[in-house]
Length: 338
Image (cartoon, rainbow, N blue to C red; front, side, top):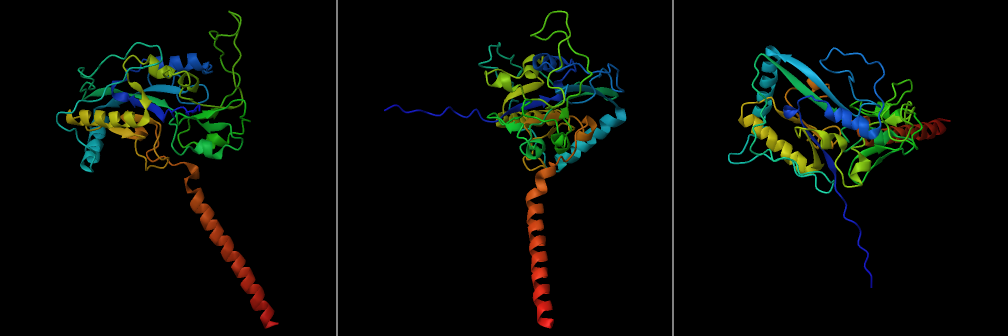
């Protein structure tokens, strides 16, 4: 008798982005655009932020790095707000523990990641000025608003726990754009500067912009994951600021990193996206921040628009039942009076 065994479920994958060791080189941005064939942004103008011309996440930029300039007053405010969080019960570092390090990218054909356990990766103490690095990406929410509201089924949850858009199914209605509390998904527009380094066109000619008019966002490099590879941004990151792996392992590694920074006096260190009780049920992309989420352009308490649908339906049902009962009662009462 031949027994057929089901393949093991790969489990939820995700990112842990440690912004405290990001150097803002934007290698992840370039790798993401290169691998996913995302067109360049059209206006080519500098924003009011240092070294940033992509400005935000969208249909053409799936990993975005920005420099956030802070003076002495802002630095002191960040550390004071962090102290208040610690006083509310954020964990401190247990004596004798060793912070987790990035695991080898086994199975993707790359060389093992460098062991950084003996390297001091604490940000330099710059009391008068510093740059915070915002390295943003799609959150791949546990309760994804974009997935909930899609009327065509173009968005789906993969076997890795990520949320991916099927461009050939999407009709470009834009409902998902309004459903995302983070503003990371957009419809791709035409009229963009088209790169000349894609794969399947004649050298020297303009490559066509793919998937114009449909929703686009980070897929966590789904095509690479099914081949056992690491997402392009994490593969390229020279400082291991972007870590990829099993979601639960990354969450624990992130908590240990926060404990380590707190033990060194950097009380402003905090996690974003690691709380399963927030308005999106936690995210697949976890971030270590050195200030309030708003400073990084992140909502402090994200909430998926569809979170209240069950309660709304229940209340609507009760209201409808009350109205029907009222109509029936009025009919019966009116009939008796006659």
